Image (cartoon, rainbow, N blue to C red; front, side):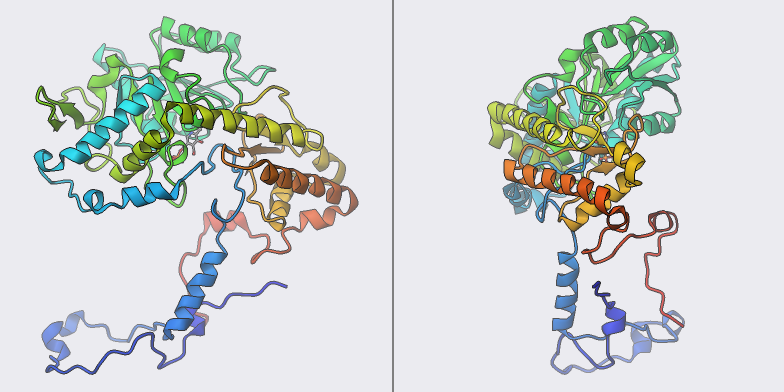
Length: 487
Ligand SMILES: Cc1ncc(COP(=O)(O)O)c(C=O)c1O
């Protein structure tokens, strides 16, 4: 039985108070003296009046209705939260960091600049790039920055290239970024392996190609085995290679975008490097570039003079300009640096090893119940399909996702990538135990059994959550984000 939650507006009763203050013991000024009459409200605000306890209970109960990585398994493929050690939050909250002001003179913030510098060294080593900019605030923002850098490079050579190739297995933000940067997205199909179709790539690449945006491993969780050839084909026509490294946890310590031939990479520090992901930030889609692209990075870039002093260098005449206020989200860099130091090189390698092991274990547990289109060893994630149970019992991807809520699991990413019918994209991450993965596999298996016996039970799920099936389309298109009192 679902319990409707009353709003604070409905709970309030006139005269209730959350705090009692001593009576004023100084002369009160008349309101007119404090605020001119034309600025005063005519009718009083209809605010709810409640006791402290009521307010506390209301918000505490609401917070318990939230689902997060701290409350349960969250296998949201590609966009999942990875490991967010709480100690890193504590470090980022050190007053020495949080009390800084971006207008302070460089000489007074040497420690913070050194941290940026050291974090950059670490990320350079992990990616094989020559410089990193921490300015972009999110993955998609990093993509736009990277693509603008690529276009600025072509412009500096007197070329106006407009075409950007993007595989159909790319993350959805990639084609969106290409369009936003004013370029034409040309889709490259995947072959029967789920990898870039080399022949199709060769047919589409030409002198108008500004570059290729590649998510590697792609959104099927598959590593592009032909990456050397792909890089050569694009470079041969003067195009550049962009690496969507949002999910670097698949390859850290094993393969580097810089060594694969990529010219630009973005990382989602708010996924792989320990900042919590979601809810609108703050994040960091840091961008790494090869030597020849450094002049085009957003300004300022960090410099270090002969005496070891750090400074912000604004003198970059070819820069694409600023893409974020000041220097990006500094505390995200603090967390990334803390994480890099805590893990060390062997630790990062272990992260990738465990992420890949967990994904392959779960994929193998699930493939007897769900269709697996590409039967290959995956990296950090994999995509299964509900197409058989859809065909046989009318239970599709959305129904499986909703039913999982009744078992206490956050659903995987649904209906993506588009090249798999009824897809469920699962990313278990490196930190989950075998028991958790087994519990999830059992729940997925039970949903298939339920679909066979009583499909209606699945298509009407969830049954045990605070709210049932929502009208997601209306909620997305016409969100009502404020309370409107009933007449
Ligand atoms: C592969 C990939 N690229 C890009 C993005 C976009 O990142 P953001 O959501 O920070 O814009 C994501 C999302 O997490 C992603 O998984």
